[in-house]
Length: 405
Image (cartoon, rainbow, N blue to C red; front, top):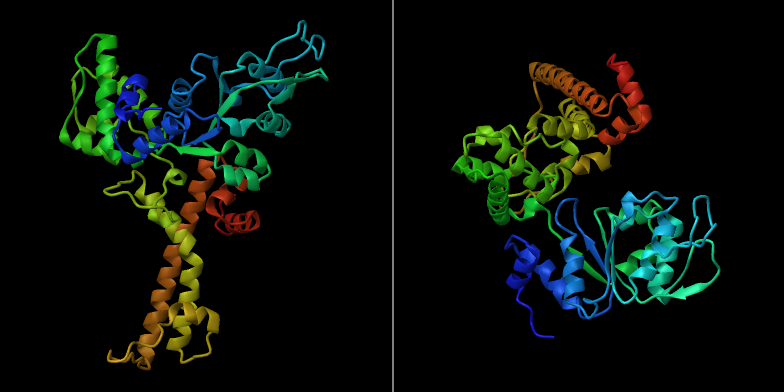
């Protein structure tokens, strides 16, 4: 097969963007298209995963066959097997006639299983059989049928976590994931955000017969710095809202802020949570982030204070394991030595006062963090405890201690 130009693919499927991650995903889709291997498309909700199964189908030998997209999360669990594999007449209540399933209809074609992580485990077992042998059985039948279908699946779940939780079959994951295509979230494509906004603004200007929107420089900066938890879908919806509502076609940062909802703390992969910090990233809820950080660090701070207090009192028998975490290792040769002078009595008192004030401030932070967590989860203590990364028993004790019942 001749080398396919990525820009031509973008034009054909109305894909906007030039980020390396997006180009890489398109390139993989085009490279695997002529083969019959299954593919798993991963990425957050709203990144545009639905375009890639169509790329694979259209550039494959199956392009003249059926292409069927199935939203696995939108079909009730009781009917999903019938939808996928068909059923016989009378096989269940309401089965007045026999019915062909998608795997029978799409023979020689391609099936796109969107939200494949939502499939119930028994259906996952049936799907695995189709992938391995090309065989399936209609609901209510004992006759084995054959199908020649290429399967492309997509999910926004953390599949490894779902496997650990027993919600997704590991063998099915490896069978689907013969080729993996990861679509990066919009926040990792900063160079594409303005391009997408202009495209959507132009589309809605034509649709609603009005001048297209224009962004001031501060608005462009805000657009690029925003976290975009809903990705491209969210950007498109916000662009449409602004296009319809705002009479002034030049949009400033102050106007744009009215349409950008605050991002929940748990959505932010901030440096405090071990993620990679985005260049120039700003957060709309910095106070709550600091609350979370201080809450998580409380135990470490308490341990440090105990050690420091022991040093001040002349007690050098602090626990070795804890001391190793805080007492510096011997300095390199040639550097000045570290001397700890024995404090005077008034210095010890100052340390005690400072310690008391610090403890009070930490308690206030902890109390505030618990209140916010309970409010976020509608008073559900189990969910609040998970959010705070503490046990329910600890949360109950803290609620009682701070009078938050």
